[in-house]
Amino acid sequence: MKIVDAKVVVTSPGRNFVTLKLTTDDGLTGLGDATLNGRELAVVSYLTDHVAPLLLGLDPHRIEDTWQYLYRGAYWRRGPVTMAAIAAVDVALWDIKAKAAGLPLYQLLGGASRDRVRTYGHANGRDIPELLDSVRARLDEGYQAVRIQSGIPGLKAVYGVHSTDDDGSAVLHQQARPLVEDWDTDAYLRHIPAVFDAVRSEFGADLPLLHDAHHRLTPVQAGRLGRDLEPYRPFWLEDCTPAENQEALRLVRANTTTPLAIGEVFNTVYDYQTLITEQLIDYVRSAVTHFGGVTPLRKLFDFAAQYQIKSAIHGPEDISPVGMAAAVHLDLAVHNFGIQEYSGHTALTNEVFRHAYTFADGHLHPGEAPGIGVELDEEMAAAHPYEAAYLPVNRLQDGSVHDW
Ligand code: CS2
Ligand code: MG
Image (tube, rainbow, N blue to C red):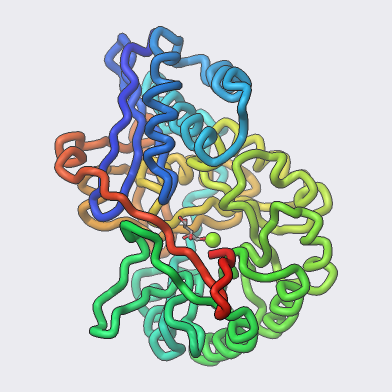
């Protein structure tokens, strides 16, 4: 079997997605997600101009060899653009291999280790009453674990909370130029414990509550927040501090027993080395799309398992249904599964990417379709062309740029 076509499909059914479609001389096709939110076209060029020509004529069954060829052969390795491009190739090859075997991908990953995949959904509110309504809405949709994000008194727009213009219209985070959001760490640190207190008072002690600090705290501030939240027993505190400096988590870990989740912006195992071997975190967050594909992510989970660390694949809306499908196959198969983030997608997106995975009672299942179980409607995709869109930029009250 040989690869005879490699096509990059860019579509924007409400937000931008980049998808690689590989076709073999047997007529089998495979899909891979290459969406890098806010920098999509960089990956389009990496794939179209530098990778696709090298794939033609290769044996699609040689997944590990192709991965190594693209990772080591480029010389310039790691990084979000490179690893999103390699991920798309990797997942498309797994899709083809599983289709050739007539099996759903999870069966090639060791088969099911559980019956279904537990998820968490996003709840947010500009204030606490609105947040409580949002938590209630997620519970009504069947979620059994909820991430809570709240507006901060005195701040106009905050990560994870939909912001509105003065006329009440929703301000989309995806903007043709970066939306500028404001930030005040002290106001945030004062407010979040009250948010947890209100949610616990309303929904009780048992509901798993997650919170994303989105890289915004110093290590000592993260340790302080982790300790302040301990009475509310969070399921986890996510991205509590920028973790490029992995040693910073020693300071956080020394100050709190709140479970820590990190890694959605990480692209290789080297980003996690200290965090895992010193058990400084409890969950690894990388997505198939940002970590180079199923092949390396499975290796990461096996490495993390030796240190009692669990998987928690990143799954917001900017991970396409192709990336989500690959994640759910991995979730079903690996032993040290923790939880799967699942924001869901718009109805239009689900029409462009018809998928076999299903969501019920707060759980996902990949389905039994051969491959990853996703079909791309290229005609519909073409009807929704790319639209320039950027993630927001965060500024402190004095105007200096801060992590978003
Ligand atoms: C967030 C993401 O879901 C999460 O945990 O950190 O929504 C993140 O902000 C986006 O993926 C950025 O593109
Ligand atoms: Mg996050």
